[in-house]
Amino acid sequence: MSIPSIARRVFRLIRGRRAAPAILMYHRVIALEQDPWDLAVSPETFERQLAYLKSHRTAMPLDQLVEGLRNGNLPRNAVAITFDDGYRDNLVHAKPLLKRYHLPATLFLATGWVGSSVPFWWDELAGWTLQSRQAVDYTVLVSNETFSLRWGVPETADIDGKWRASGEPQTARQRAYLGLWRKLRDVSQAERVRVMASVRGTFGGVHNSLSLPMNHADVQELTQDGLITLGAHTIHHPALTTLTAEDCREEILASTQQCRMMTGVETSLFAYPYGDMNDGVRNIVAGSGFASACSTRSAHINVAREDRYELPRFAVLNRDMAQFKALLNS
Ligand SMILES: [Zn+2]
Image 1 (cartoon, rainbow, N blue to C red):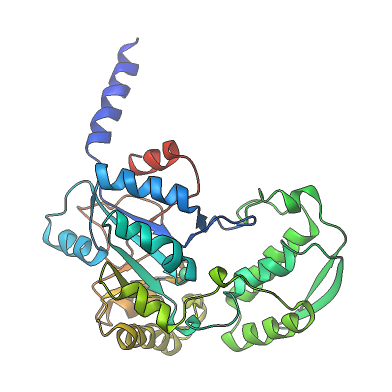
Image 2 (image 1 turned 90 degrees about the horizontal axis):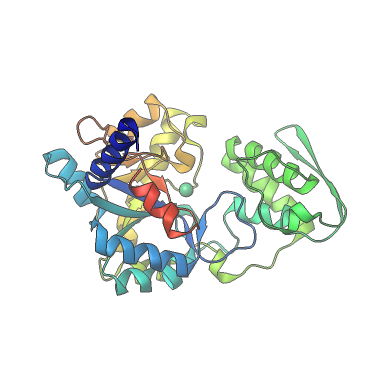
């Protein structure tokens, strides 16, 4: 073995031992056939990840991690678990496992979606496009831009569930999904609601209850024993940089108030929908009494100079344990 390769090994060993604090970002705990954004982790994978965290990391609630960061006394192996949006599978699949391992978590809840009878818009869109098995010829107008939904029987790349929205679309269904997703993400709430209602009128939809947002009773059940607490994630889940400062402030503050009304507990934590933020959005959050805000930047926390209003988070994927350990020890 050469000297440089020994040095690299020693360096990796030291770095591994010096694990830096990390925040983990989950969305869903469920097995899915189509998951273009890698939002879901199966219950079995989630349990293996929790077992590893329990024995190898110091897991703590996110507000405690933020407090430790402020005070400079954060353990190097500190980890906080977070969920975004408020899917019903968080209550049915994730909570029993978090209880079994006594691991706390924070749910960043998009409060306007609580009690919705339809899935989050990006999931409903995936149902119409990626999961559809019917031939379709349909045109939809979104903010004066025409989108064609035109396809025949599904191609192999539609069925195998391997395509990710971060990659090039391979089929008409995938192109339609990604094109509409990008457009709908940035239009006004009113336009998004109008377009979704219009397409729903034609395509309809049957929804598995686990794929719906939680209702009020679900949120109360999820948070009642204090193991899982809420953070704010806006009301409608807009891309905040597309809003006026006034609308941005309203989305942020009203969702915080709704979190408090639902649980009776104040939250000082916020997460930017889609990770979409800029200095203006950051400063609104920082000036609104929050202790901290989470982004979707993938990194460990740099305890020496981390901006508390742009904390990085690792998106946890439905992969094997080697990938999970590599992420934590990267
Ligand atoms: Zn979100």
